[in-house]
Image 1 (cartoon, rainbow, N blue to C red):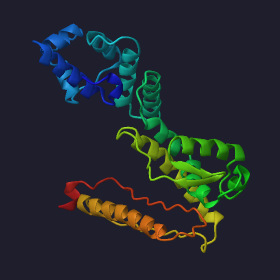
Image 2: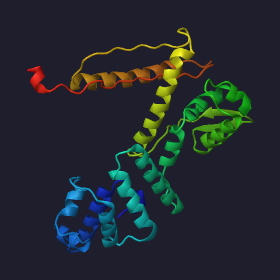
Image 3: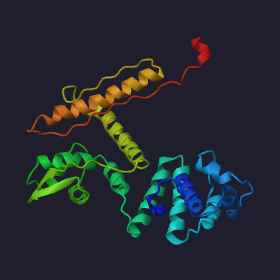
Image 4: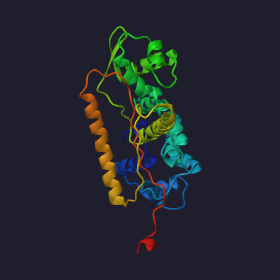
Length: 277
């Protein structure tokens, strides 16, 4: 069975634990539940199926019944918090704590890099800007940014981008992008990206008054859809993003970093069937 440090879902971990115990000898959900102090003989089976959740109190008894101690027990509690949390802030805190525990015990995870990369507009913008300014010092780079960033921040972010593999050093103060994209688990990356979307949306709002119409392009439409239309539009927006990047990649004499936001979201509830009869 894999180390618990490789899991991001406690439902799956409990299921794998049960199947491993069953493979090694006679073991049932009834026996498992009884050892964890539950009167219901199939409570943990329902948990694994996603039909029930573990509370913090129940998590303690389950962890002990599975023989988890020390950092493994601590990791399991964070795992439960992460999966049960409804707020992104709680999920992020739990996931970062899971990463800390895993890193301390020699398990490599990349979610922390994803969080750091997306925690501020400065990381993706500087990743694009720095290769266009060979030989520039951090102060020169900072002065080219429309939003405030200090020379010290540029220096720190540059060190992170190189260490994390998003930029590579080609010479003295000369950098180029690697082919690496930001990769994290399917559980972590959406949380990190939501933070970036919020920050970029705020920057877009400021840009309405900050720049002239010749410097920025804003447009939008309000329309009615059904689920099939939404799915098709989402695919078209994804395809548009890829097309935009392919156009930008056709040019070598790049001299500015820009951002495009697509916001596609509901502004009403779904209308009940009775009104559409």
